[in-house]
Image (cartoon, rainbow, N blue to C red; front, side, top):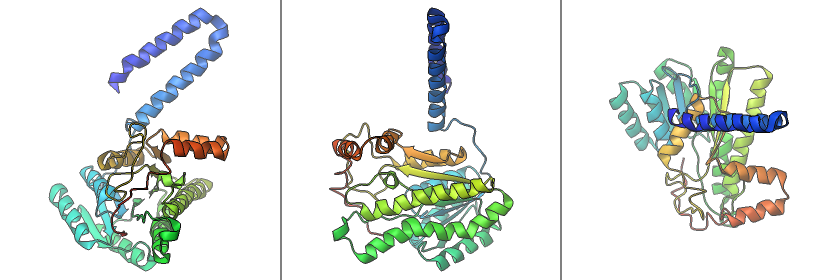
Length: 328
């Protein structure tokens, strides 16, 4: 942040000179430019994780789909900061490796892992209770991270494949949140994190089931946020909407303009998510340029939006998709 101070001072000097030359007639322009400068400064600080952060020391953090990808990466980052970690997954072997890695590095009993099929409410209930019993502490931060992608167009997909995508990416959020929310509300403390996708805001060819599930996840987060606001609860919500991340889940997905729409690295994405949780951000779109697509969709005729999506190659981004086996 200190490196940016000279640039902000130069901008302030410019505004001062501008006001001096224009006099009172320039007051509105100066006010607008000043507001823009302050907003830009805030966005830069937020984007880089420079805002005031809350502590997660001894907080119980529960992560679904934590055996690999950004789930594993987040678990390690939170453990490093003194949190108690619970990770659940259907891949028991990978799950155990992550738990052992964390406990070996950050101390015994830092992390606990439990098998969990998030699409099964009974499995969710049992796994959450196991984790609470192990750490002897209610869950403070719930991160709904588990997800799958088929990468198939609607006529090439199966009934089982479509159902699995919806059940894991959307319906499962209801099962996890219902198990922890009441205690969070009673304690007036907690945080619900939804790992959604930019596919929850814009549709992509070859991702009909996935986008449907992520639109549902985004709607779930927004509705939950308003339920909590209505009762003046201090329980926080965060919805994360990234572009493709190079975890292997979207292997083969392409970006026509990688400088504008880069495939996000696992390390960058997980650190950005962790910062968003620390800073109690409500919604995170990454990369930030994708906010433009959402604005165009909201303001302009649909044909303008459709042509823009085709021009930037978003519609064809899944044409060479390989991915990995459909699993949690």
